Length: 260
Image 1 (tube, one colour):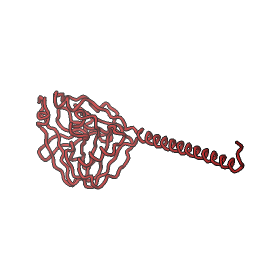
Image 2 (tube, one colour):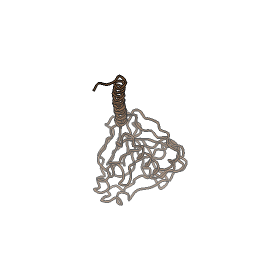
Image 3 (cartoon, one colour):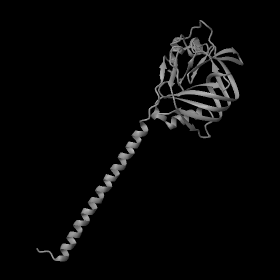
Image 4 (cartoon, helix red, strand yellow):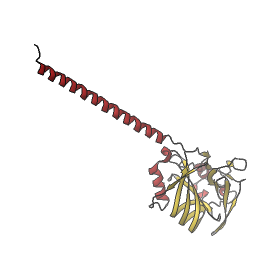
């Protein structure tokens, strides 16, 4: 059957329209595919940030349950440039904190006083540290007023895709409860209760301080307690107080994490 000119024109128009629709669908699919690729690339780029490596020596559980109180690491022969770290003092005779290369130790004097001094020859039965040259400043939300809300915030932010990392806090605390260990020389330890037999707590008010912390969801019993993702030590700005931070009321505090 021979097509009339009008019928032929209609057939060509329909074919052209169909081709245009197919072309448009293909373009949309390519566009969506390109967008998805870009989104995946962005996600990959965001996930690629790597926290500075942690140096982990021994484990908290070996001190608490096996009584391994002797120093497993000493600092007088190490390069401590740009270095930060914390742990208990050997023999559980105090607390230890390395802040920007300076090794600070605290020892018991009385129920309301302690001795804080630099001691690069000291050692620790377990320890965590990291070398960090540059820090990134982060303004914390105003609702973060204590350790619990800080830990929840860090859990939610998932910096470095959940990798363990060091952090520090700087500012003013309206209240801080810190402790240091003061185990008698020659003590034998086979439980946390025995390990903490000489622990002394100090309550501080309206204090300006630097706080060093380590965050991990993987190291309970290694450098954090079994019920926490944080281990933090506080050093007052006047270097009169230093110890493990048990609780706090933050007043004006700023968070710093390592630049990746």
